Image (tube, rainbow, N blue to C red; front, side, top):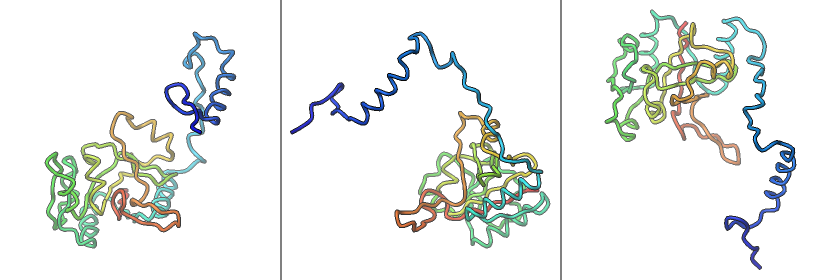
Length: 225
């Protein structure tokens, strides 16, 4: 026997109707003219978990990035070009895609072919790149997360998702925040945000981890002190 269709042609779902019934009863004393904005909800959530010095926040960020299997490096502005060149050499990178706004001096010492991002680069073109080098918008210490917002030194989302190796530079002085609430307060929600916590990875029901499924298989993070 086939159940009779309910409103809108859908078969009755006892669990759904039970939940909706509870919602209707809970709202039965609410005047029809009342709207959610008439009763603002306090947003006084805890913004950080504990107090930290700037150095402690950076150390926590590095620990969490490492826990997510990213490789963390530290350098200053003078040492950045040499470090980036060395990291690309270790990867054997020959063709590197970069956003149009990447500071020109960052890769001045890297003996690689630099390919500036453009709309003409297809996913197939990007898949042929050995690495991508970008900056970031923010880095979150408590979660070990990098946030990209398609700024000039980050480029389009696709250039950080297709190449197998992502090398990301974080300016410690002004880009490290403690928590997600602090990050949200500084980000523009209408921008295309990419949240990165370690190399791309997934696992099946047996918990077999596979890396590089939805993005780069390897992530190097340079903390620019």
